Length: 284
Image (cartoon, rainbow, N blue to C red; front, side, top):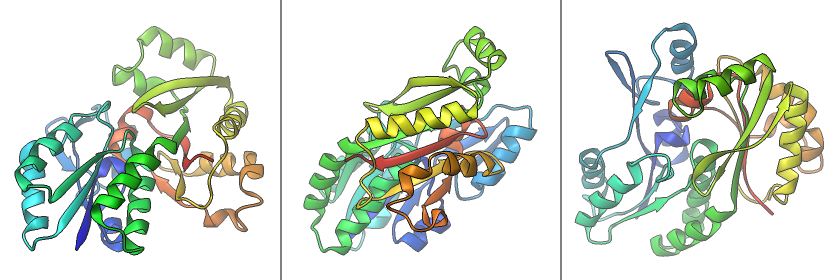
């Protein structure tokens, strides 16, 4: 039997993972003296309540080698193979820790650097499940994922620069100027790293820019997994994006409510803050 293990940077919580038929290993997130397991004893909604309403900026921790080893021992004890999908090695040391731990399991554990996070990592996990259901072997699935992950595109509009500044991703003066001008940056995961790929003034222009960038990537391959994502306590901005980008979906989706939509978790939510909207897809 082949099992799939994915980390919580994919924004898949433990309950959802069980329904999907895979296993999830959580990141740790700390608020001051309190430490939680992402998607286990801290839901994504609870995370944003603490982020927005509290005064303490959260810190997320990579999954260390000891925790990976513990998970691998449990999942391989019956002789099963394990395919592991991690957050980008450019964003966390989690992948490196998983690779070191996997060396003890003589080829039973195969680790993939998603070069992504959030919904970008999630859709790679969904594709892995699809391949396993088709009866593919572990080695074949890994080869296919390594090839197809190059086509994953993640684009997101960030509502505020405040959290990127708090996390040390941008200078304070840039954040202050952006807030004064109501600049909405559009970010993407490029080569495993988060990059600024555009900016617009106001939400409508930023939504239009996001749609243009999706089309510039070659458009969405609707035969593959795809997803929308949002952050915060409300999906109001997501609904506005769906309205503004209707031409992207109209000929492929009968009902916009059928589009897979997910709340961003703590690993990425720490840096983008509330009211971000994004899309993850395999490009044509």
